[in-house]
Image (cartoon, rainbow, N blue to C red; front, top):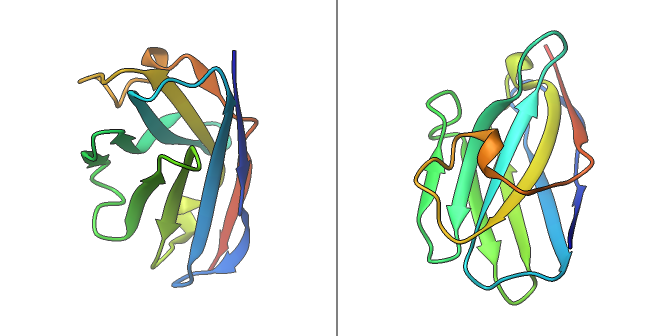
Length: 124
């Protein structure tokens, strides 16, 4: 079993920055894909960014150029640096993980483990 714990959410003004962290523990596998998803009230969960343990990164068009995903394999931690935040980025952000690479990294159903979520609120 794998446990994921997110941290770093909060309240920020539009144009500001936040950095989310997601630490994995338990029976982790060195080859993995970790992703960030978000869910705003009344909306479906949507893909934000993903990173494969081999280094490839992927982003939703809505965050490309503003968000950066990175990972520290030794610490089993993935980060999401969010810059130039907009009110429409307000959501609960979830970290997810699966063993091995998946070309369908943007599908929440492809992930086996999820964190509890962290709230990000961007005020206008």
